[in-house]
Length: 475
Image (cartoon, rainbow, N blue to C red; front, top):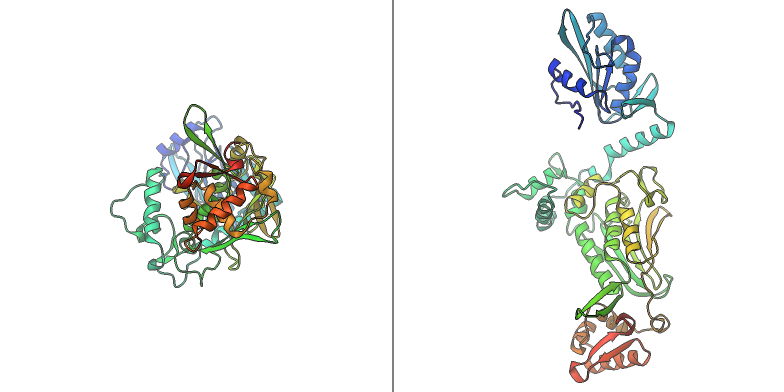
């Protein structure tokens, strides 16, 4: 691995020799003398537009330490050239003696918040160990990115919100999960406030908006956007609801509520595996893919609009997950299908989800969704951007029985189906699932009707009889 200069590396002759021995790199540029001042400034500008770097005058292209005559005029010329970089940049100019009256001049660039940077009115970028002019669209994207990083909604102080307004149990659970995943170092007896500081969820001593999204409780009036809408529609349009719910709360609570709703309404095909004496379940939609889409929606949505929320909609022929806000960084829906930059609108929120093991850092969430669906035998999901929202549309891995598709069900019968999909088979279990106000005789009558239309079959007799959905029993 190549050594790279950092803002803490002491600029001594020994340190420079170690760096030079590795050769030029993404963060190191070598120049024979200040006669190459203009080219050096372009490299310095490129370092400032990336992650910093070091320019050293007085080193031959083959790595020999030559040095040069360095006087006050030399340093004046160098510092004047540095001032031509706009906006004003953090650049340290250091003279390092090499003997025989000769010296190196090292310029260390530290990126700040003021970029993108230009030299002589032009922007530059570093690609490997070379420098090239920045394209106009790259420059504009970097401007927007820097503005967003500085003024992100999640970074702003959550005025009036105190530590007591957060779910401290969830904060402690976050640390436990992160330590188990080896994505956070354990600190014995660490208090919630110190944990938030380690997760960069404090602005000075004030909680950030990201802390509210991740752990806030009882803050619906002040943060109505911390919500999720969950709906099961009858048919393929939004004209009629079977189930319609909305929940407010912190991000992890929203994930849990969504998973419960999906477990209730996503059909599961079951069959007994020959020779194993156990049941094998196959959900109509891949749970891992749905969870990935749900977490992506939470991490990448635009929280600045109080009236917006995340939406999950289940239809007879598809399932959709929607979030407010356009794709960040100029990404397109086509790019989401292949390798693409990991551009996150809410860096702090995404980082906590990463530490808890919900997501990875490398921008493969959408590709993972595609891969999971392919393995399950489902068609590739669609990624959609329209009307200021981003959606993922899933197609089922198998179709429901035709009888279920054509048979209208009452609300009570829908509850019976939900209970059967989640593993209830005995009459007593089904009665409990439908509700205490419904008699056993009524539930039995509903089951008899469902058997007549070939949606349910029974196994056994009397109170020990078990009920199974026909299309979900491997028939």
